[in-house]
Amino acid sequence: MAKTPLGPSASPSSASPSASSSATTAGASSPAQGPAPSLLARIVRLVHHRWVEGRLHRALPPDLLDRITRRVAASERRHTGQIRICAEGSLPTSYLWRGASARERAVTLFGKLRLWDTEHNNGVLIYLLLAEHAIEIVADRGLARTVPPETWRTLVVHMGEAFRAERYEDGLTQALAEVSALLATHFPAGVGDDGAAASGRNELPDAPVLAGDALLKE
Image 1 (cartoon, rainbow, N blue to C red):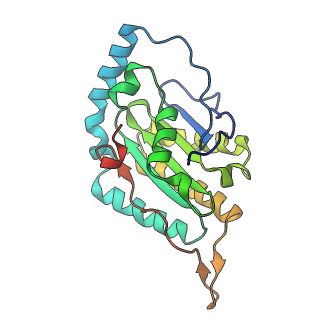
Image 2: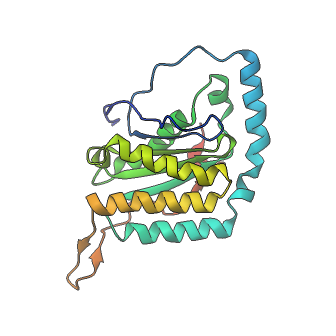
Image 3: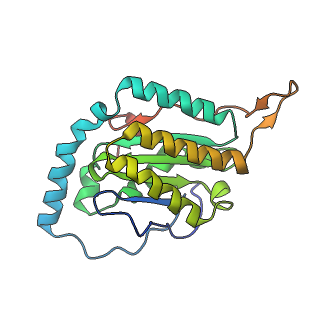
């Protein structure tokens, strides 16, 4: 069952048009749409996205993805949250044609990747869109209730610097570290009988999801 809206999303005012970043809560209602983009604007954006989309696997090669997977697994041993990282080179054509944002795509993928369906309602999606150097963080209601919007805004502004410089591993690692710190603070792992941290079952895969995966089909 879909969750009820939690309120508006927040975008840092300092984000530049070529390197946007924002954070929102799962199920958040989209802001009012402005005028529909002109035909020329749609075509220009479509061409740019299609030109960039082939760079995704060069920007995020298999060895980098392996390192990120291990970092996600290590992170989730510290808390009960579930983190997924998703990256796309470009938006689907239908999104581009109607002028949809990276934020709208991230919220959709949050649902497709079932981050809303975790035991403690504390799933987090970190979404990267190469064509717009955009970073989006979508947090479920359990975490959104405890982390103020200003914290998310500060976090994504810091991460945007690495993505603008195309230091994707640095940016994703920083995003993961900062989200992990919030989860460890608000949803720390329990302690097992042996005194070691016991985070519970791993509810979702740790590996990043890239464009082309069946899970990301429109």
